[in-house]
Length: 294
Image 1: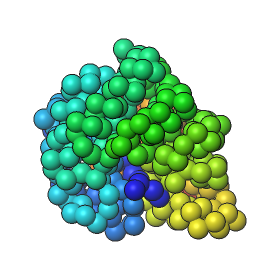
Image 2 (image 1 turned 120 degrees about the vertical axis):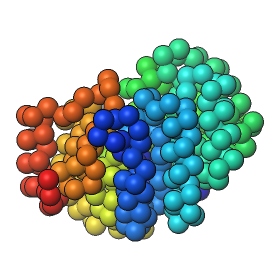
Image 3 (image 1 turned 135 degrees about the vertical axis):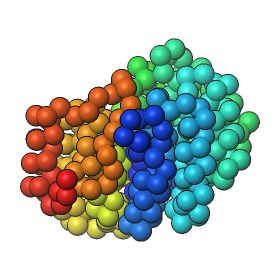
Image 4 (image 1 turned 180 degrees about the vertical axis):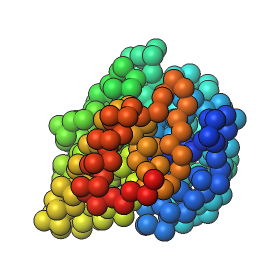
């Protein structure tokens, strides 16, 4: 259902960060669709969902669905550490026509495996939309075990996919040994290694900047053309690594700005990229074929 290159799209803000810049969001979406991106993922971690109000988050999801208009998949970020809150957002994504919901593991309160299972079961059964579990212990403080993932897939109809951001190819292998859930990499640096052991693609940060490269890499790996996939992997690798010079999405927004796509504004408590970090970023982008416009 969800495969290939899926962009965890940034949420552009006005210059004072007080509102979402929907004109720029439309430009970014249209560019992604024209570049062949398989899925648009609004209001995720890269989309700064943590600093969006619920009203803004729902409007970003609705706007994305309407703008994409069926030309790519839309997997809406609807996660929360509050099950009732996540359910409300996930039901909304279903109502406005999203193809699926990306749901992060409940953070801060660190539920047990049983709590994780019940959280996703409630969302999948009551919202009635395909769920992509988002396993990112670096953000949440807790990891979903392969056995819990397999239980979700085997016992809950609408749990169909997982974004694996544990940074571990072994985690993907362990999941694949236990069940046939669709696995997407959550780390651009690991797209090819994870696809080589059974992942179906990526939910990507770097695709915000180089969507055609991310798409080409996924297509080559899916078709079994690993010499080409390796070539594209190493072409993309320095850019992907650069996206984490500072906290995501500070860097990808700065990269988009220097490439002429947005103002780079992030919301507090995130702050603009440091001068030294920006100089390093621009040097890496220039060395790797990204045109600098600003």
